[in-house]
Image 1: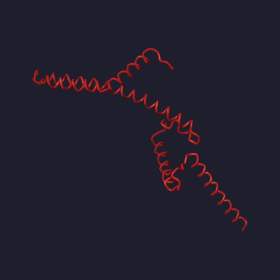
Image 2 (image 1 turned 30 degrees about the vertical axis):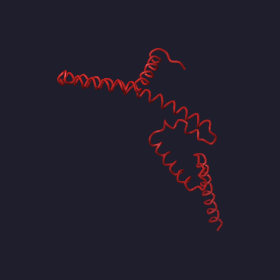
Image 3 (image 1 turned 60 degrees about the horizontal axis):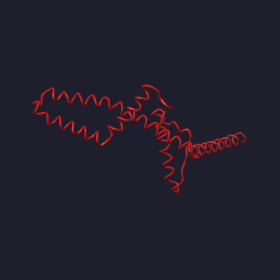
Image 4 (image 1 turned 90 degrees about the horizontal axis):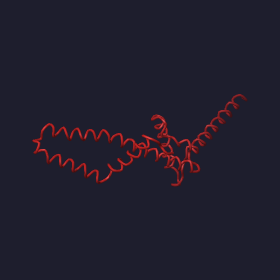
Length: 163
């Protein structure tokens, strides 16, 4: 799984910079930079150049950090998703259909959210606090109910036709 060339170098660089900029030392350095800039204000008579230096510097740093932070977030998010997928795959009774749920559209996620809200309400009504409902259990129950309804309709049809 090793990367080569630029991708590997950038991965190493971005990991190191992300760790460094998230440290107390980096915050202290940024804070001291602002203090030095403020102290030099009277020396430079609060000129436009004095203001431009801090504005330009902070804009450049912010612009670059946005991309590094996003890369770090993407990597962390993927790692978390893989760990969750491993837990789902290893758990008996868990729905494997949720392994890549993050790939669903927002509308599909909202539909699932509403579905689980219904399961939460059902779980609240259970007498056992440890009772759970998986998607498969709920679907099996739903299928059983539909089958019962269809059988009832067939019986009514048969009863009407025999009259």
